[in-house]
Length: 150
Picture 1 (cartoon, rainbow, N blue to C red):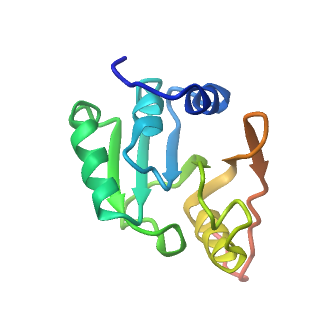
Picture 2: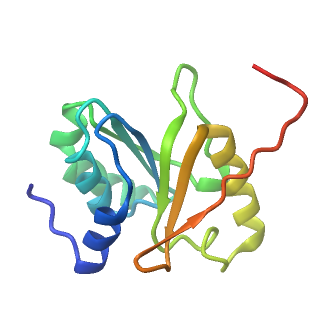
Picture 3: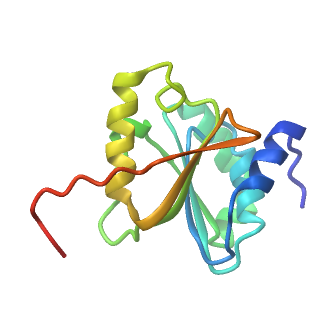
């Protein structure tokens, strides 16, 4: 694995309850180091790394060229509070975010929006992790039922 992670990021990736088949969403991927480390652990799974910054997405795209070519990773420029599944895109099994102000309490208004977007983009039983624990903290994914059932 040619991914160079800081000890802190390595501990976070190591602590994620990943399964090789999972569909994973990283919110606020930055240059994509953690996403590449997750992609290396997936076989039939896939990670989508999103970030609001065009330069971060450009860095992640460049650094993850082999993971993207292998089909284990994709990147998308999008703020977490605007994230929606694209047509035909399957829901996610696991979501994580490191140093994302909307999820760590720094921006509570945006946080509510991001949590709603996550609930809409994940399968029942999916899990959400952020940094700030030892090394991770799990947040509940609250599902609001609008009366529509599938």
